[in-house]
Image 1 (cartoon, helix red, strand yellow):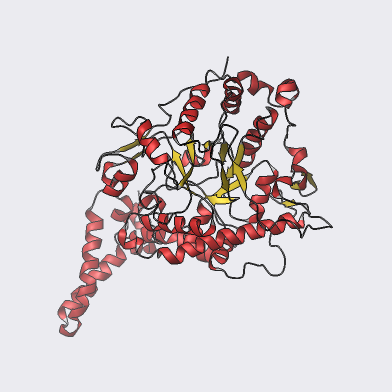
Image 2 (image 1 turned 90 degrees about the horizontal axis):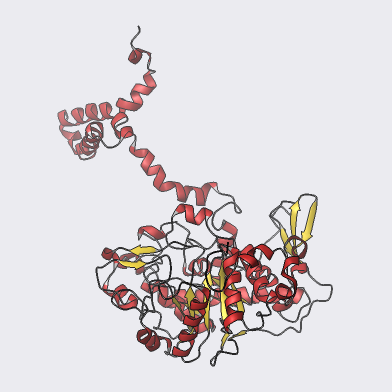
Length: 538
């Protein structure tokens, strides 16, 4: 039998051993020739690295291809940047493509945000959708709209902007990022959701309106055992800067998944905001301990509303099992206790870190979730009392218009406001190595984010986006965005056919679930729903 090594191509042998051997020979020459000896400063370390690679036992490639295999790791590190800046087309990036990011950057900086030479979208692809304009645009539409949030059970309703900052916690975001967002919110008269990580000193630094999010960890209102503490909640909820309270049931990026902030990351500042001991793990359970049924949830919400001094109390969720939404609706009808608002978070929503399987395969996308919750409220005659917000990749006036057409009363955005701060979508949020100082607690990286400058960009992006939204409403000939109907939105099903949203998705009439649920697509979910439990009725 012929020796297999003899059959190996010479090029393969060189790739494996040629570079180290060549470096050794060059080092020997440098050592023998006095005036070349300074070159040993370069060659000797490379030889030592090659020898280490050859003898180490953890990485197969480095044993078989000393030194050369390290190029692979270098390319892995450079790959996201090469793809984003060299390889990708303007419409190819994910989660946000280049054009979407560029639009936010332009509006945040006050630069030209128009586009030359027509659309680059394929208007005959199955992803294309459009809004119906009018021959008679309504140029007399009001210059601005706001939405009053608060049911008849709320003593202190809040007038909200139509575009606000979605939930992002201090700890996930840096102190400078939180301060810039809040200062921008104060300048633009819109609200800033704290996220579930507690209301930190940085959220209060510039006086911007706050929505305090309460998750299953009860950060900022918890006792020593991690359970809800009503007294602590009352102290914070009655701060004038806190305009509304939001019960987090689930979030788009990782619905149904709890979390643990390792004790090593629980600094003094984070511990102060979360009400947890410094250096100890901060646990967010998958489920709340304050309630386990729809009725209990509403009774708890009523307690929060009373303790807050009558401020609006809402809930945020990514829709999972549809019958659970109907269970909440049934509980509201049975108890007479209503939430003041519901935020629907789409599965396309983002976060600093989430298990890949949860980000990719768990939860209902915003469109389907928003329509389902809208139908549940409308079908039970609850929509006039309960406002509905949409969150999930909102970054433009067009995206807002689509959400309003499907039932939203206002929109929240998270990553778009991160772009306005200077985020470059480096996908380093979970590593504490964010290059722009936004999603990191590294003080040396945070210093690059200048609060005053970025706050102006936050406010400017929000203002210009609302301006573009108003222009679209005007072009549609409407008086306000709540007049946008599903029939005003068309979606292409294939290259030869398109239909209005009203023909693709069900949109119930007021009271339809109560009048004759069996004639709706939700009859099975309605039968499975119970105000007494979240689990489906057998």
